[in-house]
Length: 315
Length: 295
Image (cartoon, rainbow over all chains, first blue to last red; front, side, top):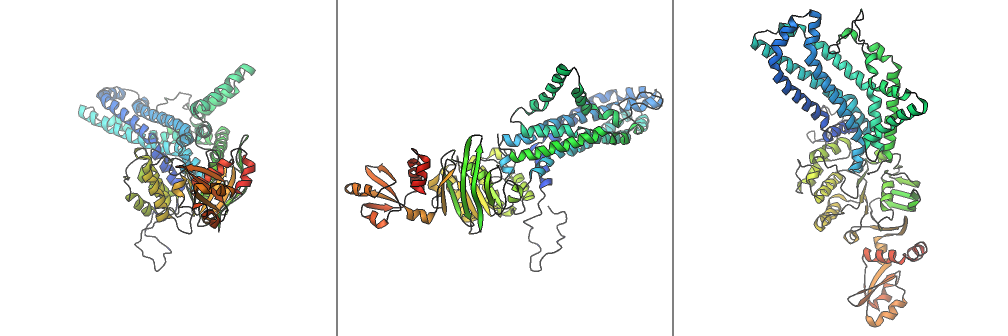
């Protein structure tokens, strides 16, 4: 897997230049990620399946597009963008939710499945460290899935735009309103920003799920969720407080108030279907202690998962 | 050069002691059979050697501590575990790609050469292969790795006799050379008798026999005794006696061949017969007789 097969800087004079390179430089991390994608095809099949369903539904709903665009054209120009953005925003939300769901179930099985089917003995018979293995699994929800969700959403939104344009042209309404008012490029930037925010903010959740999947012998979902519920209930009964519950709530949804400003100047509320770029607050997000604390906790969970995998045997 | 060196290797699971002070030393170029009944501590010993389990005592494999340096060690060590552990979802080509991608000493062309001699199709998934074919695939992967130590833990379990024979034949003909070392555990002892260079019996976590095969052949002799010589033969203190078709077969340890030739037909016993004798003798009082009968 050399990127430049011709570049052999120090080939000995007597060797045959055409001989195939039997021993290549090992790339355990790259191949471990490939391995995850081979085993867990849902990582890309689930977003594609959702995309296919959305495409089919949109194709049918296209009949109504000329009428709704005509209605939008009559609105105040400031409202037009938000109204036109609706179907595109729904697609993005649906695919982001799919990505999160796939990520959760992937993590719950990642270090459990290899013990269940005994293949951990095969993986451990190869010169791949536990650190590489755990990181190759952590990168799936943190990088790979967001990238897949982003690309799928952009392609799907573009197809929808083309289909809508075709219908509008055919019906004689024209594409001017749609193409001038639909803020698609801005939406893609907001989507990319949101995916990065979500991955960083939820990193400790995924790391926790990976840790539990490496630890539990069965019922990984229950082990991941029930202890947290138990703590919340216990705190409530024993001390009549809900600090832990608030902490959990903060970890799941706390990113929104830090990464976005939901009020325009003059305190007008924003339609969440279309958040203008001016309302993204990356500075505020990056300076939130909760983000860095969360990432530190994620690192601790991953380190624990690496350590745990050394001791793990088939179950 | 010493490939494996263990001193006082010990491993306990709670109160159960699986490996109880094992000392062993395996030199380069040997094929060592580690033979023992179920639960004798074979797999635990192998797991310690492979860095899969923590242990007490001293253990060095190719100069490394397996528990601390497993991933480094696996560049030079290969193993096939007790049952097929290849992931069932994996395709044959993916297995080749993956091992080629992560292992610096894997020769993909060689593995494909081995696979070409089998009925395995490169597009198949592991779950579609028969048990024998999965073992063939695993063996093809392992044999294409230029490793210094190969560990086989019941590699032929559940395979029919054709696959078993083929397994050891390819191992000897296509893989083994004097610079490699093989450590194998199996219950099918007869099939590996001609393969081994060294033999170890393990019982209740302890090594009860440790000898080379040459030593084995001179140390143990089996005599099919002439009925009229039975009393004389028994006076030479056989370690085991059994009846086959009405004839008594006596097993002797360290008794002069000339002396035995006088009482019947002398031959080299099978590992299985010595195993039964050694293990059986210890049933009554294992710890005492383990020292007395064998050591």
